[in-house]
Image (cartoon, rainbow, N blue to C red; front, side, top):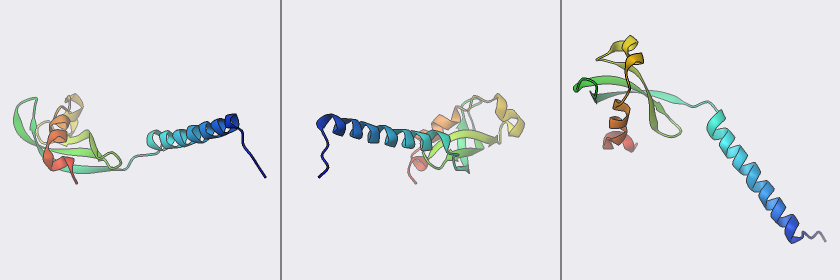
Length: 98
């Protein structure tokens, strides 16, 4: 019959916990993310006007990560934007649950 001492059991449990933690963190940070572009009407905090923006949404975390196009600034102007509309859209109840 095989028996495990208390020290061996603790070390085995720590090894399994460490392996599981490394695998979960590796999947979370190293695997490529699935992104989906969503068109949303937002209020531009820069000029306080209503704008239509294409927002990139991470499908794993369901968070908005980037503004890819904006009707106020255009595609080339998005690089100069602070992208504060992402916070306003994230707080909106329409986009938090889906």
